[in-house]
Amino acid sequence: MWILGIDTSCDDTGVGLVRDGSVVVNLVASQTLLHQRYGGVVPELASREHTQVIDGLVQQALLEGGIEVSQLDLVAATRGPGLIGALLVGYTYGKGLAFALGKPFVAVHHLEGHIYAALAEHPEVEPPFLALIASGGHTHLFEVPAWGTYRLLGATLDDAAGEAFDKSARLLGLGYPGGPEIERLAQQGDASRVPLGVPLQGQEGFAFSFSGLKTAVARALEKGYAPADIAARFQQVAVEHIAQVVTRAALHSGLRTLLVTGGVAQNAALKAHLQAAGLRILFPPRGLATDNGAMIALAAWRTQAQNPQNQLNLPAAAYLPL
Ligand code: KG4
Ligand code: ZN
Image (cartoon, rainbow, N blue to C red; front, side, top):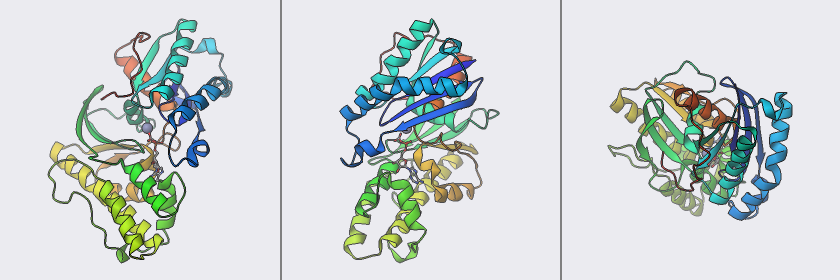
């Protein structure tokens, strides 16, 4: 079974091909350079760029997958959440293609896509498990008791984890996206030189908070601490905060398997710290942590197997709780 997956929820055009649950092609046309000079994503520019590249990217995916468009069994696209103009490009393209081919169309929740990305190389894993999505736009911790059931345990009270990396990187004079830049600079720094506390110490719930860290980075710069030391401490504290919340959730729920996904899941310090926590931690393979189309096809493959649907009549939604 061949599934085409499309994600245009933000500033990357993602197109993937999945065959019987395995990723065959995963193409992402990044718009980072387009938005870089504005210091953030400009929604109208994002929609226009998606419109420019989507058809070419789908043609290329089919070529690389070695199939004709008529061989597709299903088309899936991100329904939401995201920038509505951007979402609509991939979503209506996907619907139109499915309709023209006479094949089912499946609407996928963006966060569900992120969750299934972490299972790409672990088809044997079954719920219950915990799932942490830490990206530029989301920091959500879910308990997944059964396929298709998501209980939100906690989310960020302010900035998303990736957003904190991006904003702190900008303060430190680094480029965008900030996560990899901070990770690189942190290697040259000494975290112990900068006094910067772990957020939400003592809380009993599963909330995250990152905006105080960003302010602390600005203060540390004003006080003259070296940028590399600040980067090292910021990363250490952000990682410690995430680890504290998820290990508390594991204790509370009794679950020992944790999926960690979204752009921040690529952070090596986070990986090392979580792996030391004695849980079974599953990360997405390279290229599937950040936004992409293959994860949307993977999610459709799983959900379609349990509950076959054709969702041509479902509208896209900028705001969409899971
Ligand atoms: O999942 P993603 O592509 O975008 C959203 O759906 O938002 O994640 C991008 C985010 C950016 O904020 C980026 O700085 C962060 O993930 N990121 C990282 C790393 N690589 C990407 N954060 C920390 N460490 C990294 N190595
Ligand atoms: Zn995302």
